[in-house]
Amino acid sequence: ITVHWTVGRYNQTFNDYHYCITYDNNLKKAYVKKGIYKPEDNDNTGDGKYAPHCYLCNTGNIGIGICSMYGYKNPQNVGNFPITREQIELTFELCAELCVKYNININEVQTHYERDRKLKKPSGKIDIIYLPPFPDVKQAEIGNFIRNKVRWYFSKKNKNNLRLI
Image (tube, rainbow, N blue to C red; front, side, top):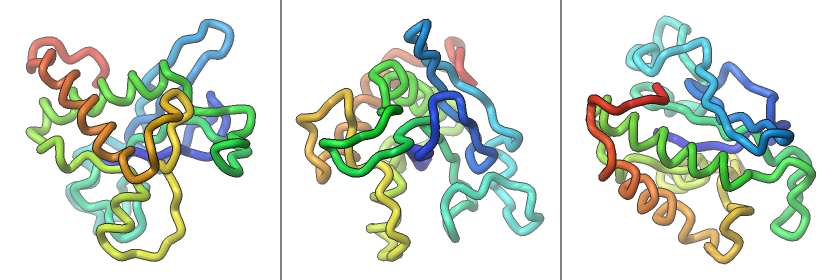
């Protein structure tokens, strides 16, 4: 699973992802929107019908895009659409459900930034290097922070109580 921010607005979804986490600013509520591709579509990317969220790393990879961060410059200037607490918590829960459903090791949940660094791909992707709801989490700790939150949600899930996927 690769977690991204979209560099978009809260309700601006993209077909690059299997799931987009949108946000209704009036209701202060986040929602999971399914993309046009199912996670299974990325089992075989050779047919061209898959969610292309990670350049050269899409096979067997589920993409989640948090619809946010349009206008992001740096942690002091996050633009008008920062990731909200509601969005990131829903992302953690969705990752946990996907780990349960597809028997994914939680250590395989990564940010796009982490995935590129591990593969030594110089794409310049910076998602996710800052979490506005958790400003004290340092850039180098974000991946572990996300995985620990996913573990907590995972501990509450089983195949019978999946509600988001």
